[in-house]
Length: 144
Image (cartoon, rainbow, N blue to C red; front, top):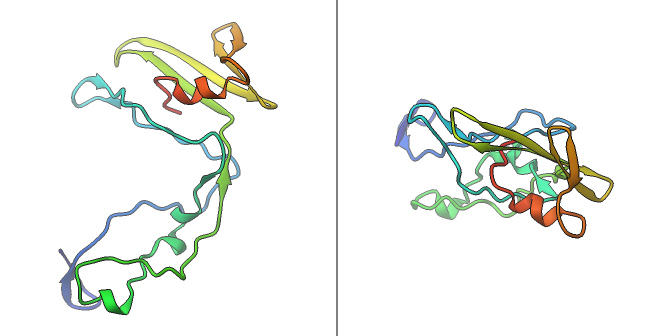
């Protein structure tokens, strides 16, 4: 619990990250290197190819609205009437790293039209079967 100067009592808190304004092109950089422990973070991260909704991370839509019934209880129920706007993004590229913290190689995947291409230095090829989307979404090492 954290002391609240407004209500002059300790209350439960919830840490949240918000965006003041969302850009036209949203670039997300994943933390893939742990310098403190001198290692690469290689956990798989799942992300959608289309319709990533970031509207709920705008600050004026992130505030938890606690219903009157739950004010006295320990639960943090969100008021169902508070709807966030849909701010949708479609994936059109990834940057991938293979290797260790100290050495490795960067490649990228780029979507042109409805088809994905794998870019490795001067070599560009299809990212996979069909339009290549499945291979891009399952690729290891995506960090941007």
